[in-house]
Amino acid sequence: MNLAYIPSPTFSKFEIGPFTIHMYAICILIGICVAVWILTTRWKRYGGTFDQILDTTLVTVPCALVGARLYHCITTPADYFPPTGNLVNILKVWEGGMAIFGGISVGTLVAFLWCRHKHYPFAIFADAIAPALPVAQAIGRLGNWFNQELYGWPTTLPWGLKLNDADAIGKSEICYSGAQCPDYRTTLFHPTFLYEMIWNLIGAALIIYLGHKLADRLKAGQQFAMYLMWYGLGRTWIENVRINYSTVILGLRTNVWTAIIVFVLGCILFVVLYQYGPDPRRRRAGLRRSPPTSSNARASKRNSFARRSRPSALSDTTINSAETARNTGPQVPLHR
Image 1 (cartoon, rainbow, N blue to C red):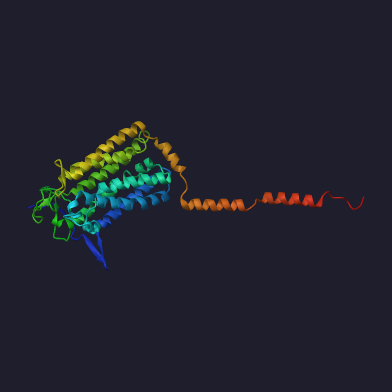
Image 2: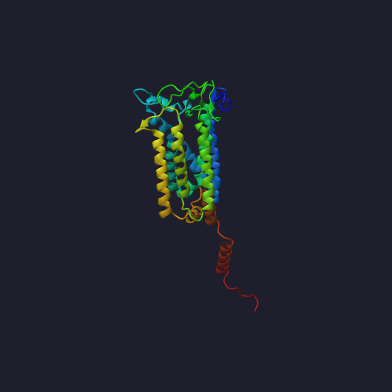
């Protein structure tokens, strides 16, 4: 009998009127808000504005969520595509199924394209968001705790996760071997959500520390490369601890292959940027010279038009004096 363990929540959703609110969604939303706050703070320190972060966020976040959903559906096709699945299930996000790797890939691509469109220095944006992403992911992992899903192999460690009878998605988890998982009422499991939370928070702290310590040596974009390396490395071993079913390719789970690719890409990006990357100070100077936001541009145009349509006081005086002199001619005295 285990005397020490991590308990699971007794609920994973609640209702407000006709609406059902899932804790998983709340965790993701809180993570996004915290990430935007961190990103904004760092972006302003680099010379940017909140308006620039706001428009980028409004475009990038929805696309990243769509990418996260599609990645999950593509890597687990049996539930979503014929002949065994139904395409309608892709829209049933309340049943779970969001993959961070899909969100990172699509979100990064959309952010890159948007920054090019708005003439924001993407390398500086990537550095600004580098520690924000793992913090958001750490908070989002609490959603797995509420759902009692994506846990690890059975364990007898004192921090093992104890499941309960709550109506959670992971209660009917199918194990890695394709068989039913061990009886949750008598078995503790590795809390992989907690492992990833701790790993991500350590990574965020390291990125902030090294970014400050090596500010004069790092090139623009290298902090984002650190994030890719750190998350890819951590996800590689955490994914191998998980017990949930996954598609296996050449003996490795799909997400393990993806994590390895992310780690390798991070290493390559770090080395390439070290050799050929732009100076972050020049990119930040360019950020300060970025085109004004739409509201500021409209105000600037209005002021410019007002200045052109309103003659100066000096011009009025000069014109009036010239007209008076031309009309009156020389002054002749009436009496000589």
